[in-house]
Image: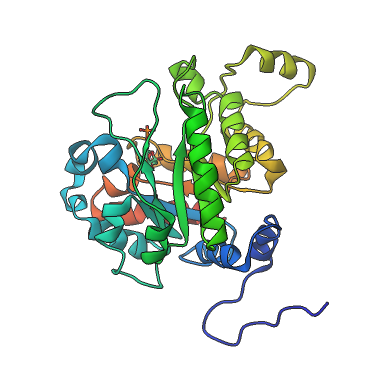
Length: 318
Ligand code: FBP
């Protein structure tokens, strides 16, 4: 079979790494693959197979003041689109209103991900079930490369969420749009410690894969093991969870043996050294990247840009 020829245009050719990642999705259409390629071929990490994505749904999820008071320019949705471009992010993810307010800021330059389910924290639900707040057609209208969806494995309402994403994912794939899943164990009988336990995070990542996610997003796992049945498995088949890199490797393996793009969230704002140390662990364990919100947009603009670039440098092996 003939090989695709190298591009002679200014647009960079797909790298072998990106071609290999695309081969992990054999059932997908050229449209979906083109959009996964857009995510992988944009920004300072273009072509490396690594991603740093800016997610800004915290205004909806946590409220505007908890999210933006630490760096007030962030109340303006345009700020985040500009931040993502200046830092050289692969993509920018946000809910409908936030994207509508800034989608035309960098058309064709910054891939967008429409986060199309969201919850607020006013009700403080113990068993989260986000509302559907956007559609695949909204994503197409706004020129998005992907839709984003949060599932809460563990929640009493998880099965409804799995049904919702089944339908959304079917429509997105039929229309050539990639699917990114935030998979956050929460609710049911899970303790706070259990939400980030290594066996639970691995399970959550696997569920997202089974639901058809192209990109899986989970929190960095701790060394805690929450499920008794898993403790017995690890007694028989020893697993190494000592370092963050060990645990990331475990989560990546649970994600179809490493044949899915897996990125890890940044969490609450912390000092630069802690962020970079965590990113080093993710990189060493074979994670595909980070999705870093509060740690970037809650810093002053130049500090947020500098931190995002320092994170990218780790993924670039610098
Ligand atoms: P952060 O880097 O700010 O943690 O963003 C990642 C993210 O997944 C956001 O998309 C989302 O709003 C937030 O974390 C949810 O955090 P939590 O589950 O702690 O409320």
